[in-house]
Picture: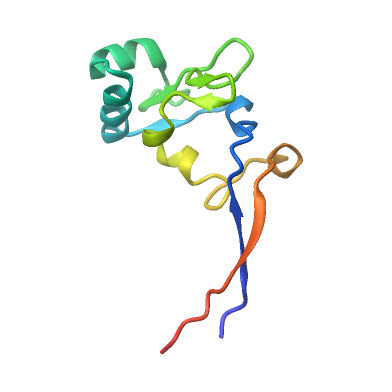
Length: 115
C-alpha cells in the first residue's frame, strides 16, 4: 500500500500569475491560446510572447511588474486554454517560496494501487 499524497486544489488566487518567470510554450499551446483570443498564431506570438532566456523557444511575456501578460484583473484571459505549466502548478512543479504566496487548498489523495 502506498502512502496518501497531498495534492493542491487551485483556488484561483492568481498570485502565481503575478510571480515573474518564464512560462514555456509549445506550438499546440500557442495555437489553442490564439484561437481563444480570436487572433492568428503570428499575432499571438508578436503580442504575447518573448524569446526565452536560453533563446530556445518562446515564453509568455510579462508586464512591467513581472505579472503575466494574460492576467487581467483576477482572471486569466486564456483560462480554458492556459499552458500546461500553469495548469500543473503547484502539483507537478513549484518555485522557491511558492507556499508563502499560493492560496491553493491542500487535499489528501489516496494513491492505493490494487494488484
